[in-house]
Length: 545
Image 1 (tube, rainbow, N blue to C red):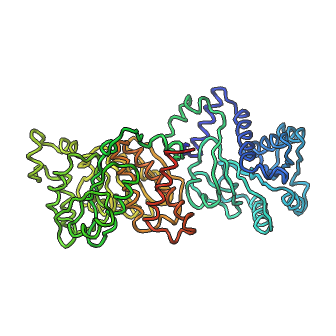
Image 2: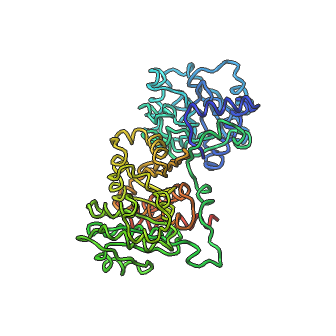
Image 3: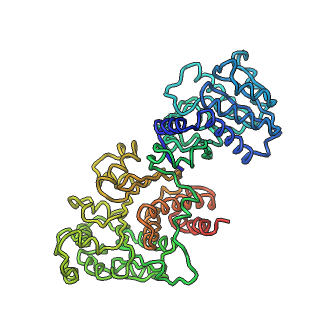
């Protein structure tokens, strides 16, 4: 599913119309798809009937087309015209011919007829306003929507509300909402998800979200404007195609070896969570490189892992540990660095030595370099890299740090860590997450996973993805370690950086939702619960039936 701005959607429709897919045909396709969604989702409500709140624009047209289809299927279908439409409107006439009923707001004093009509129908289609509105709403329209909202709220058995393209009163770019906006149980959006729907407060009003086609030529592939949209909202089938194959004749080497450099005396569990998540993603072998004092407490909890105890200073990774890590990279197909590091200077020096910030610093590596004498030569010797948590904060202390990282390095900051990396305030970052992620991904030349509600993934070529999940179940210490382990585990299995980051973030988000559902609330979810739930999410990807 693509994520578009309102301007992009207008351009797509304009180009489609110019190529022969008329606006009328697009409306017909949208209305039919809306009706089919109603039939699929709410077939048991046929006897209760469907009422459409109809505006004067395209959303009202989509709604009238859907009502006509439903009337032809034997549904009791009614339209309540909230904003004036032409007296000779062919879509209104079509609904009447199909057996539907039209109610006009101008003939309904005190809106008493609207109240009764709403009570007589099980489903309410909100087709008053579309994607082009600007807030605040005009007073008369705001009053009508607020009246409807309050009536629904006060009904002992309220109708199921289905928003057409978006709930009326949502700014589909900014995500701002009118206070009069009617919350939906289901939002059926046309062709692509509008960017404002993946923002708060709009997301709170969507209910479930479905995308239906409008008949774009070859699913949009022939449209220049459609191809130019390079931000997606991943869904199940998209993620499934990037899961690594699991051949029957495989051995553990088939699925890669991940080296996780993590942990400190104050953050013992980070390495464990990351390593377990990596194994759950399908990695064949996971080695945990940790400060030596942590080995005793962790090894008994994680018998599947192999271990690389590292030199330490007071329980944190010491600078000289870089030589040991570098000498154990030969079999590693991916490297995860940073979970639970702490911010001590010796660990920062370890990271600098690992990245060879000063060429020639690492004597053991020098012996292996032979003719290699440049930073790019060195970077090519590092396996695919994921950097998380305190590793990012330590990285930010290195001038031009991005130039020392191998290509397709995946960086996984939360907004606070992103603030440290960029110098921007968290407020500025949160106000424009997608564009900020894209800008810095291009600047740094690496893949960025900006965590939080609606996690954003961006690549240097401006490919981007927004994960359509916001849940407090993931607002818990350790869940970021699970995410970095999932991504690094997929990288170890050969998935490229962008797709590993998107798939890992999607699995992580779905696991958070599943963990909350299993436990019964989001407040009690622990990071380990999210890791455990990832098993069921990944199982579904490999066994969709």
